[in-house]
Image 1 (cartoon, rainbow, N blue to C red):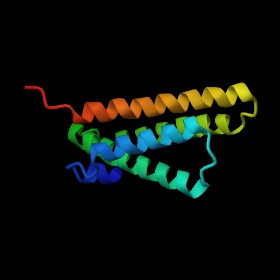
Image 2: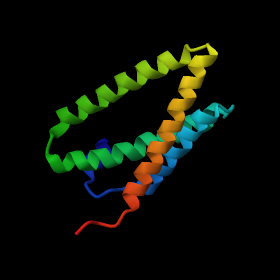
Image 3: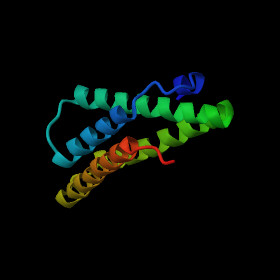
Image 4: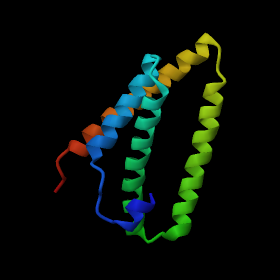
Length: 122
C-alpha cells in the first residue's frame, strides 16, 4: 500500500488483480495439492496488486500514514486469524465449507472482472 500511496497513478491493472483472485479462489475450491511456493507466490502478487490499488486510492483521500498503518494492521490480524483457524480444520465437512468459500472467492473475482471491464457511465 505504501507504493500506491507514494505513487498516485495506478501501477497494477485491475484485470490482473481479478485474475489472481479467480485463480486463488479456484485453487481453494478444487482442494488440489498445489505446491506451497506457487500458492505463496500468487498470494504475494495478489496482496501487492491490491495494496498498490488501495494505496493509490488512499493517497487521494489525504488519510495520511496513520490510516495506512491502521488498514495494514487490521488486514494482517483478520488474515492471520482466518488462516490459523482454517489450518487446524480436520473434519470432512469443515473442508467442504472451506471449498465452498473458495468458490465464492472465485465468483467475487469474476464479479470484480466484470465490474472493471464495464464502460464508464456518462
